[in-house]
Each structure stands twice: as C-alpha cells, then as structure tokens.
Image 1 (cartoon, one colour):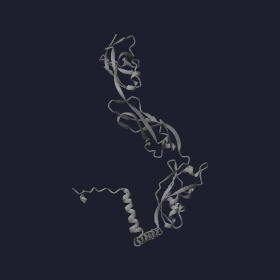
Image 2: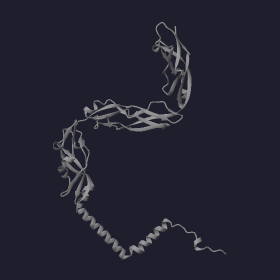
Image 3: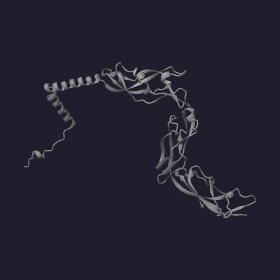
Image 4: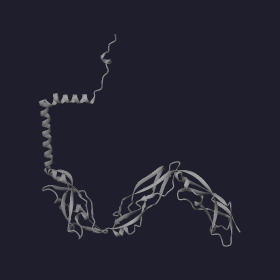
Length: 340
C-alpha cells in the first residue's frame, strides 16, 4: 500500500479570511494584552504629539487666501462687480492659529483710491505692492511671508463688447479609404462675443481658427477648438472661449454622366461648334445620396471670351453641380472649337 509523504500533501493558499483571523489573534495575544508593548505605543504617540505642538508653536508656513472687499467704489458698482479674484499668500504663523487659516479665506478691506492704477485703458492693482494692507487680515503676531498672486484687473467700465464671426482658415481632412467629406465643416457657435478695451477690439472683425488637420477620418467628427487670442491683445476675452468644428465623412461611390457643352460669351454674329460636342463628368457621391443625383443639375460651359488667337482649344468649366457631390472632374477638360 502506498502512503502519502508530507511532501505529497497539497498545500492550500491562505484565504483573506484566514489572514484576517491570524492578524486578530496576533493583536490580542501579542499587542493588546501585552502591557509592555502598549506602554511603548502610547509613549511614542505622546512624544509625537508634543513634538508636533512644539513645531507649530515655533512658527510654520501655511498657504491661505485673502478676499479683498473693495471700498470707495465707483457709482453703480459693488465689490463683487469689480473682481471676484482672491489673493494667495504664505503666512508664518503661531501654530495655535492654524484653524483660522484653513477654515476659509480671510477678508480685508481695500480702498480703491489707495491702490488702483491705470494703464493701457485698464484699471488694476498689484497686491505685492501692498503687503502692509494685506497683513491686516492676519492674526496678531503672525507674519505675511509671501504674496504669490499677480496683478488683479478691475472691471470698472473699461471694456466694450461686440460680436464677431468665426472663420475656418484651412482644414486638411484625409478620409479613410472608401470615405469622403462632401459638405463644408460647420462651426458652432458661428458668432462669438469679444470683450476688451476699445483700442484692442476695434480692429477685430472676425476670429480665424488655426489650421486644422484630421487623418483617417470615417463617420462624424466633432472637435472642440480654443479660439486664438489676437497678437498684441492679451487682455481680449471671447465668450465662449471654445467652438466646435464638426463634419461627416461618408462612404461613397463613383459615377459619371455625359453632358453637352454650353457656350457663353460667344462673339456677336458667330456660332460655335465643339469637337467633341459632349463630355463626361465623373464625380463622387455618398451612398445615401445616390438616388438624389439628377443629370440636369450639372452644367458644363465654355467661356468663349477666353479664346486664344493661336489655338482652337478651350478649357471647360463645371458651372453647376449638386451640393452633395464631390471630386467632380470633366473628361476631357478641354475641347476643340470652330467659329463660323
């Protein structure tokens, strides 16, 4: 008879439950009811607390915010109308005042007549220049160590607002094989509001998007684009700041139609004959619009005012075509003509 040795006995991996039970047993047997270990843990906690309180009392840096409340306001304005921007500061404080600085922003009154400056058509003030004023928001014996906030611009009627259209400068679309874009990309919204001082926004008549490129496109595309701020107008703001550029790339088929040539601008008293008299127009159309194509929607013309005195060849132009077809080409693109 064969017997299993200890090496042959399969070992089961401990489960989370058994691990938890083992840790509980260790806690109760080795730590919780072990007076020596508990004394060491409690003593360490007390020493750590005492050290922490001493460090706080010695003075530590903390970052907080100060909320300016403006006084001496222009007629018709409130403090929040001017600016809602807070001031970020670092404070070297007595640790016992910690709660004061972490609960919320500290208010301080700011007399506009004492701090306001004006340049380039804008009103503003610079908190770093008025640290004594900002220190009034702190607790006694605490010290203002640093002011990290930069210039605060004030809305005191300096800005004007107007609406301008959004244009697409150049868009490069490379569709996936078997797909094509037939309609022009849409921009939404197509009109935005621009605000700033009159000297900066008077010259802005439209907003032109940067060059956009899309590759391997198939289906509907919707892209959010940030409006570019014109050079030399850093304080100009757009509402909204972003627009959505959207278009659709659809599966297509290629078709062609045979059409007569229409002559325009024929010299008075003359008749023109083309050789050949008919040409082909090859085009792409989305599969879903295939049934909408009508041959009468196409028109091929030859502008006889462009005749050459040295050649009886004239180039043709596709004057009309359905809006939903693309890549239309005339075959051949030029023909012979005879005048009589």
